[in-house]
Length: 306
Image (cartoon, rainbow, N blue to C red; front, top):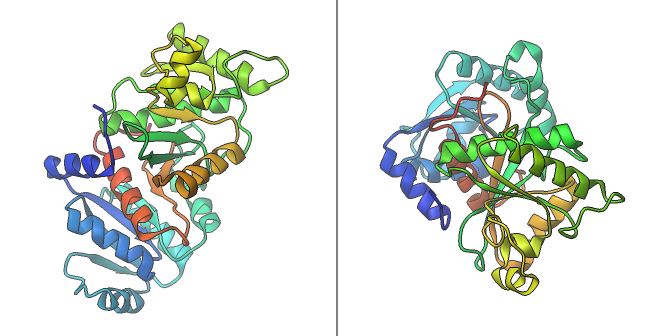
């Protein structure tokens, strides 16, 4: 199915009547808890709050919440809280993770630790989602947070991670635009060469579950008028579900430009581990964090990362 916006996705989650359990690591952060409580109010998650219990209760009280809807696990040290979250995953007591009052690096160090057993054999990558006023559906973008300059093999894994998450959310056979400056293959621009190879792998059935186009420019991926003017033929043209950027900097600039200059709303999470991981910045808005929780809940509705 196609989601026109975040609200439609939340509505689908509500209709499923299945609340996914989110382990919030170092949950004694009012900003994070505010977002989680909004997702609880939506009826899409059940929280397990791991951290300094006294501070968590104080934050909840500050937000006007009694704590009755939340399970609180008292672990004061943030790294120990991350390890406890991993333990709860393997015990089948939580379905995905969310970062609270700790830096990304220590959380990810626990996640990638061999003893945590959360690796899948693929790289981990970030998938972002944009609700853009001028576009007709939610637009996913990857990778804008983890992999700086992925090579061809890594780009393939990034696509596979994103396609798996989209499939779990109900987006079947997503249209994937592998981005470059133009739609022409230029040996001097490695991203265009990689894009053409990823399209070839898709066409011969080695990269499945999606329709891949590349290299393709941003305008041809999302704009009908540009497609008509250039007489460009592709099933992905002006209807992309997923943009695959050539490098982290390009994706980071693109997503921020759309948010700050085009009125887009954004959210996202990490895929490629055995469970989704919400790693939004501590400076992100409550709305972004709220939607990221909902998206991650949707991504673990049916998918198993193996």
